[in-house]
Length: 135
Image (tube, rainbow, N blue to C red):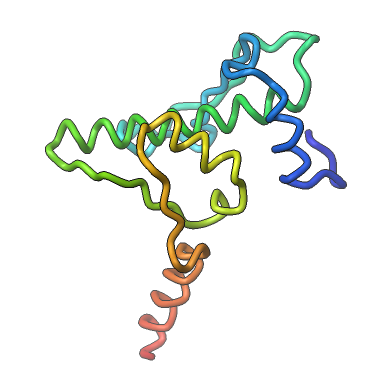
């Protein structure tokens, strides 16, 4: 969809020129179902309001916005259950995009802290694999 020769940095740069709300393009980021805060494996993602005037930058930004709004829904669900945090800790691929980190901060109203090991999910997998192997 975005081309083999385009980088995430390229997409971020293009998306940074698209206004918030993506000029009416809305993404539902549940392409693999929903896990949190509402568990529904049958939910499906979508691009809603797509027109011929929208570009790949609009689609990329809409997807990023959708993920950030999903993060806010998780933060709000935790707060409703009595679990609050003054910071949002982030690890994994999102740490490689300053734009995405800022969007998370803007949408949640929380400062974003990148973990000491930005590839924490991969490190966690390695630790689990070592434990399973008896290490």
